[in-house]
Amino acid sequence: MSLARREFVAGLSAAALAGASWGARAAGEPSLAERARRKGLFYGCSVANQLDKDPAYAAAVAHEAGLLAAEFQNQWQYLGRKPDGATDFSAGEVVARFAAAHGQLLRGHALVWFSRLGDPFKQAASRAEAERALVAHVREMCTHYAGRMQSWDVVNEPLDPFDGGPDGLRARGDALTEKLGPDYIDIAFHTAREADPKAILVLNEAGIENDAERHERQRRNLIGLIDRLQDRRVPVDAIGLQSHLRTGRQSSIGAGYGAFVPAKFERFVSEITARGLRIIVTELDVFDGGSPGDVAARDREVAAMYADYLAIILKPKQTLGVVTWGLSDRYSWITGGTVDRFKRADKLPSRPLPLDTDLRPTPCYAALAAAFDAAPSR
Ligand code: XIL
Image 1 (cartoon, rainbow, N blue to C red):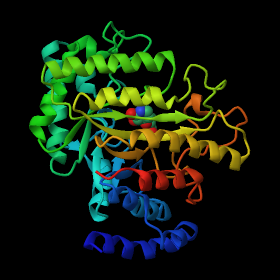
Image 2: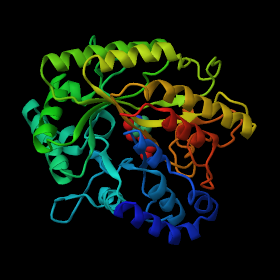
Image 3: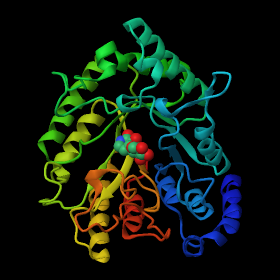
Image 4: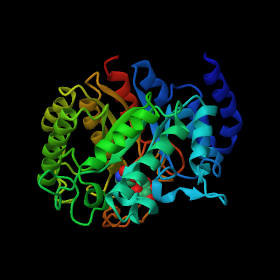
């Protein structure tokens, strides 16, 4: 047993007292992190701001996750300022320190995202000023975390399936393209590479997995974007597939989101790998709005969705790992109740993640475990 592993198992026994149901189970079985690692993959989860407030949950995160991603703490808009004007990294550092203490990888989310831009960019009055703000931000973040970030989402959600420009990039009302045009992507990636040459640089995109017209448009536009970026030698290493999925494959519910059609998705995945890129599943979760209220039936459908998806995405050697967007239903943007499209018609709380609100493993935990066990080694 490695030192890091021994340390966290030791840390666990104290913490497990706080969360008996989860702790009791954890002792004998390999964690999700361990199952993934055995195949040369990683498994991780995002964490918001509960690590230092909820010891039982923190113990579960320490045990199950081989990688952590701060959900919002490193986003430009949310970075605080210290009295002397310097950037306050303390929220992100809580996660970084936890990861270091538990031998976990760390990934950064997200340097440039249209919906979380910082004031210096939003207020920039000229192209030169906007570029200066963007470069300064990316450089500062990457430098601060250099050597610690396994990967960075350099650009998040550049595409808009409805209102994008001819190239699919967000256009109308989008500060990034309005101020800098498509070049903002080039600038962000080049700056990130220069400031942290070791981190895997990721282009992260949403709403792209299903057999729906809007997803098909995202797929075509993403491949087009990749081709243009590669022609211009922009250092994109990997594509991040957010993978916020839903149950209801024949879906009458969730109209417009389509069904998951494995063969179609697999073709798209091979278009990415054919371009020499790696893949990270960056934000996996499954909204159960298309499933019945009965918990057992619902959990089966959520688990089946995880299984179907993972069976495809874990096949290529270019897939590096899987991050779920949260670990427990206790803390999830789906169960949080703030996002309208994640409200079930029957108002029951959703069950999107590997551990339920009591930190007990759900059937989708088992689906993840089985998917890692069945994945080819890389
Ligand atoms: C969610 C987060 O979970 C919340 O904490 C945040 O306030 C809203 O967004 N795509 C992304 C994530 O890239 O940052 C989003 O996360 C989910 C969709």
